[in-house]
Length: 267
Image (cartoon, rainbow, N blue to C red; front, side):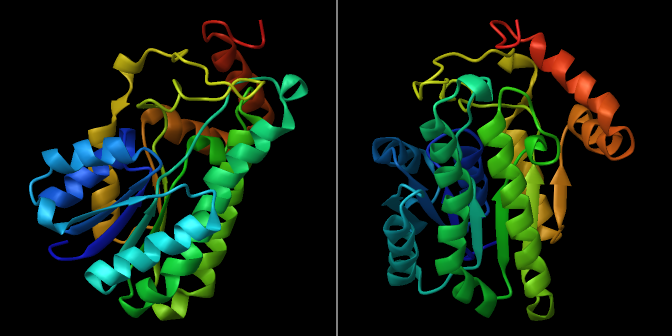
């Protein structure tokens, strides 16, 4: 990855931050995008080769921001080898009680953010026969109760990226769909409630989850090996497998598992 140009969205925290640190250690030229520019500045200070780090304040739900992200990358580094669509938000509420603006918000960030960034980066990635990555979720394979907008956005992301891979299979484009499973990050703390406000605290034990740094290592290696799909954690892998064979059984299992969360909307 030395001197490869890598764009990472949602880079200010969690998996995005860990990916930034990983690629910087491997001497890539890293472009970090997020809405929280102050956090990007702090992150840059901690990276090993700050001269090869570009910060671009970006709200991926806005097409013009995504276009600007690509333009700034080209101005500074001249090309793009890898785009990692990592920016994302979650939710936790029953669909029946959820304001539709919450669903739209999730689709705008998780799906349209991926589409916008990919649209403008694609011609340059294709020139390098590089990689387009979508950091998704097991929720993109199995609908998670209380996460209707999140699952919908991730299912849609999977479909979009699969089509992208098939359309460009003769152009040697690498497309990776990465599904980390439950990962220790702030995505649950910032998850939206039914009215669109932030949840504020995680309903799960973050200490028992895979770390963002571990996930970043797996994604990095999957890009090196040009894998099509990456599914992490035993729980994640068994959920995807059993859902193919026993979907109705897994409906009940997923419901029961999610209902055990503190302050679950099902109780």
